[in-house]
Amino acid sequence: MKYFLPILTIIAIILSGCVSIPPTGGPECSVDSDCGGYDNNFICDANGDCTACPVPQCPQPEEGCHYEIDDSARCPSCGELKCQGTTTPPTCRDGKQNQGETGVDCGGPCPVCKSNSCINEDSIYVRGDFEDKTDTGWNMHGNAAEDYSINIVQDVARTGTHSVRVDLRCDDKKMANGLRAEIFPNSPSEYTVKVAMPSEQWYGFSIYLPEDFSTNAQDYGWHINVAQWHGSPDQDIGEISRSPPLTLWFNKKYSDQPVWQVSKRVDLKKNSTNSGIGENFLLDDIRDDLGKWTDWVFHVKWSIEDDGLLQVWKNGELVIDDSGPIGFNDDKGPYFKSGIYRGSISYCPIVTYIDAFTFADERGSYDCVAPR
Image (cartoon, rainbow, N blue to C red; front, side, top):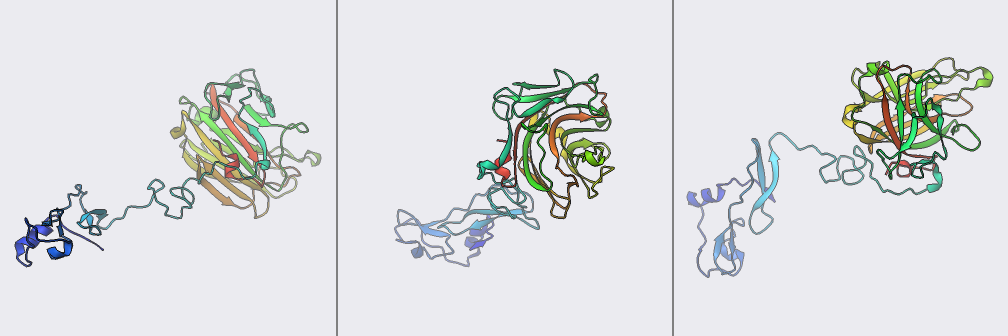
């Protein structure tokens, strides 16, 4: 039983004369019930004396709030804080499993409950932590104009001690219709690793934006890409290159604030002559992430049918959960690139770091690819 006990309740009861006062100061009892059992306000102490319970000394509550007194023990004590007309909403840091969470403060609307284990390691087909100081398994020069553009360094690292430093400058020569410094995984048989279409894939990686990274979109001609999944046009039927079906970027066109953005595109035609229909998701402010690593996990089911899927986690929190077609009607699916791409820039140099790449197929999971 819980009830509200004002601070002066006991005094008021005594002064009212409505009840008799149990004897105190002598060997008058052996159990609490010998003291009259006045709602647990008197107890039999170790000396056999009937002693009044002390009034609970609760901390001073905020205006409009009070403490419910808990009388489950021998003497009342301060219980739960209650505020009239308000309730404390559940959060992802309240130490309780509530609001649809699958664990304490994780799952559901909170960050993913991390087991730090991948049940099916065989699902992983791309890794990149660059700890061997080599670019084995990665193409670091196909989209890098200069020697300084892409390098493995020890400046900062998300995993271990090494990462890839990306450096783009105003006087770099243009490559593939733009200024770019990007890396992408390759394989012995292909220039890039292209997934099947349709297929289900997991992608995990981390991006570091230095504290002096410019968040003024005008410096980049209004937008800059830091990761993209590029389409694979069917050149045998004359199909042209198009905007990527999936991009991590920020773009002045969609927000006048420097916020992380994810765009997806779809085109059902076999020979696409444009970039299809796009949808852009606005996330949180990039300025909050300067000077630290930002972890990303993308779960994509590439499909031009209604069973397509796009789920995105940022620093363990699910920020996009979207279903529907994603990608182009190509013989081969898209391939991944990360670094910096922009058509033109007026702010130089642009430097980012990338690390902790892990990609897995449909047998994978969040725990298989999330940066650790």
